[in-house]
Image (tube, rainbow, N blue to C red; front, side, top):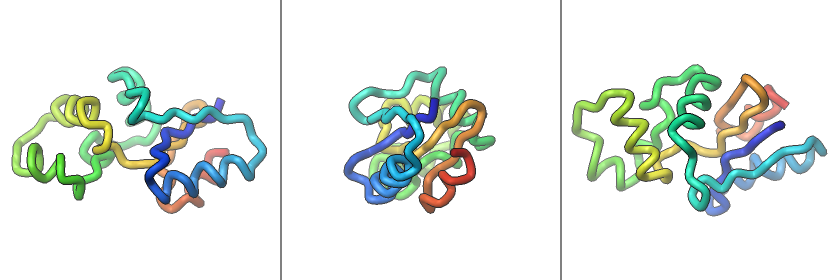
Length: 113
């Protein structure tokens, strides 16, 4: 099943959601700010994205700049920061089986659906 990790306040996330709706494929919306991602799921997403944790961080978020930006952090530290502050997670993320993409631009989603 296709999943979109979605933030309704984000324009790019809304665009990704519309693209999925237009595809007529079955999918599940995960509003990760309301229903937080588990550590296991976040690690699985990172594996599917073939990314290191730092590459999934929204580095312009004020939470990142004020709390984490100038610190030496391990991958686990970064994962814990994203779990504690889900706004730090890049969005939208679309997962389809063993593949995942960040929907920026939203056309990236077409690669895995």
